[in-house]
Structures are given as C-alpha cells and as structure tokens.
Image 1 (cartoon, rainbow, N blue to C red):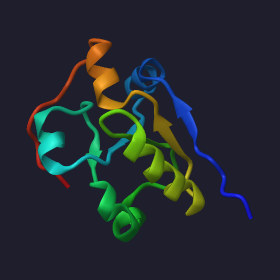
Image 2 (image 1 turned 135 degrees about the horizontal axis):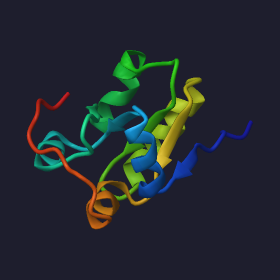
Image 3 (image 1 turned 45 degrees about the vertical axis):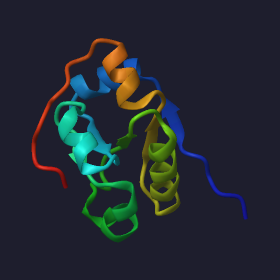
Image 4 (image 1 turned 180 degrees about the vertical axis):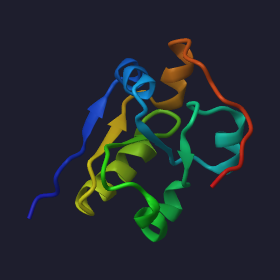
Length: 110
C-alpha cells in the first residue's frame, strides 16, 4: 500500500489563502514559533501531532508550515493519511520571511 503524498503550495500561494482565512498549522518548536510565525497560525509541535491531531479542523484544508518545509511535510503526510486535507508549505517560515510577508511575534505556543 503506497502512502498518499500531501500536496504542496508556495509561500505566495499560502499568502493568498491566508488572506481568505486559511487554517495554518505551525509545527515548529515553541521557541521558533514565538520568535516569528505566520499571523494567525495555530501551533502544534511536530512531535505532538500524533497525539493532538483531532484538535484540528476537518472541514477545511490545513496548511502546514515549519522553518523550511521538512517537518511540515512529515506532518502533512501524517494528516493526509489520517483523512485530513493537508498541504505542505514549501519554503516554510524562512520563505515567508524572505518574501516579505507579515510576521507575528510572541503569542502562546500550543
């Protein structure tokens, strides 16, 4: 049985989706999240996703982001296998910053 690969979007595509109210999940560690994240992103460190994924919305696409795309790809693959519509954000938060998009700092990590 082959695992379904999650789809990917660029940070530019994510920016367009965020302006439309997309659900963004940041799977980085707490200190990474508080240092700067996509505004409005929910936080769930990668190692907690298998225990907490039921907290995520099933009625919309989950855009998964990390620093550069590695951890988020793992989380998106897990969520896709669990029946979610999950999309990996290629380039991650580093790409988001490099593109000059707004960043939120601080906040309560999840």
